[in-house]
Image 1: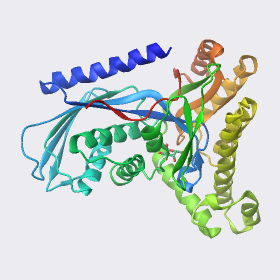
Image 2 (image 1 turned 90 degrees about the horizontal axis):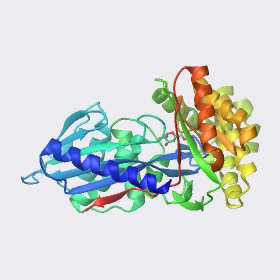
Image 3 (image 1 turned 60 degrees about the vertical axis):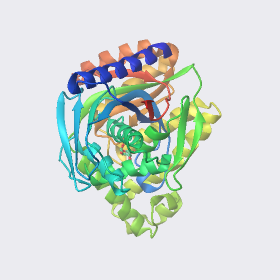
Image 4 (image 1 turned 120 degrees about the vertical axis):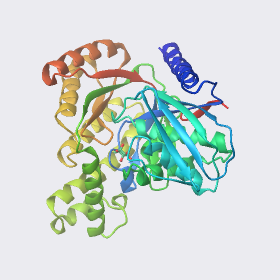
Length: 399
Ligand code: GLA
């Protein structure tokens, strides 16, 4: 299995280097990579100062790049070829400023803006990219793109960042350019991913603890529903505003500072929707801490119960699930009784994307076949299903 993963990754790197050569007629000088992520539990808690429990996955974005001749005089042209999208775009730096494009290249422009803010200057640059993180599938393809560009630009400019500086630069890029008001989980996991470990990240202190996931007995199974409902971005901002409204009524900076008891005592002061949003966040922060404790003790039954409780809360209180994700969770539970499934839930922002499950490695093939067939019968779409182990974060491959 691991040999296959390594081979696939090497093939991806070779493909990106070849597409650089065929597009730009020379060899790439630098190659950088960053992984996507999956979150085991702790959803919609990061922007509330809570805990999350993600890991980097064995799916990556790879970039190959080289500078063009010329001076770094405040003006430059960045030409980017995306093999995934079959699209070439050019970003223009004028007087050390880079404008928004309203396109996928905004994830890249935002990172250049972050480096320009440090006062570094760029020569013109050619970049080719490709990846196997499903695009827009809730596995943080956007964070993987941002982080891989940041890693590349450290090499290009010689300006090195600490891991947390890199995370915050990438998060700011996502806020300012594509305009998504995300928390720090995705970028943090893509920067700091650790082989065979999950990261219990405290989004308030921005410190993480690595929790081992070494067992070969269990696997992390990701099922991409292959749907993405268009309301995802607008609803994300709405949920964030609702959480802020709850914190304001409770007179705290973030919901992290509130216990369930305190919330319940203030229920009468709140709109019922705001109350339910806060109940999800406060409960989810507790569940996430408990899941890390249970995992350390190999108490898989508790991990599974907490994952299911997380899904129910995201579905009923936070209202970010959708029919397809609920069907996937139900199917895993049905099949799980005989197959020893530990736990299952939606993962990421919601309204489509993926579920994450912990399953016995020996049952993976049967589960994939069973879920696939039943999901097609119920929804009429073929899901994409794969297993992954916790992987390393971003790095340079060719420096
Ligand atoms: C998206 C955001 C993250 C986080 C999750 C929900 O992935 O980018 O910051 O808020 O949704 O947990």
